[in-house]
Image (cartoon, rainbow, N blue to C red; front, side, top):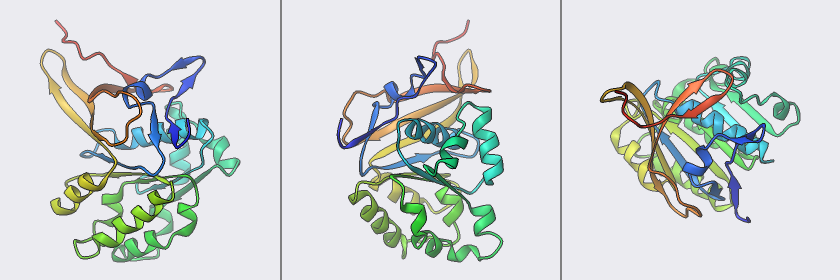
Length: 237
């Protein structure tokens, strides 16, 4: 299908089921917003999306505020999303802000650094995890339009951009602005379920331009060597 990127992930003849719950494909030119508090699964979903897109022959870049390249490769391999061969082949480009920015530049300049990082935006798909961590000291309501206009130019050329954010890290006004302008809006949450205890859910709050049906809520867990797994939402007795 033209004009879209497949997020189907098939390994050893089996699909993990998430693509089917998330609409199977992402239209070119989409801005995807994954929000959630710390420890609710934003990064693992970025890793899963990135891995499936690389396997489906897309090029990706990934900005991480959490991992160095070494720890990222170790983390993705541990959950079955090993990206090393794509890195070696030049299909995957990784930037750790802990290494490239934090040691040399004050945080107030990070927005300018992001907007001028040309190589980062060369691939078809860009991940920024986490945008709120990266820009919490440099993004404000006065320069917010600089960033959203920049993203609009990229998506207008067909690029797909994934950004994550923790709502507690930056002003509510900025957070709500991203909820409004994004094409696809996910929310991850750690919640208490009656009869079960603590569970992890991902909500698909909005999907403009969806080509297939999607589910508004998916319960999930993370398993070593496997990655994300869909969990039953049934009550345990």
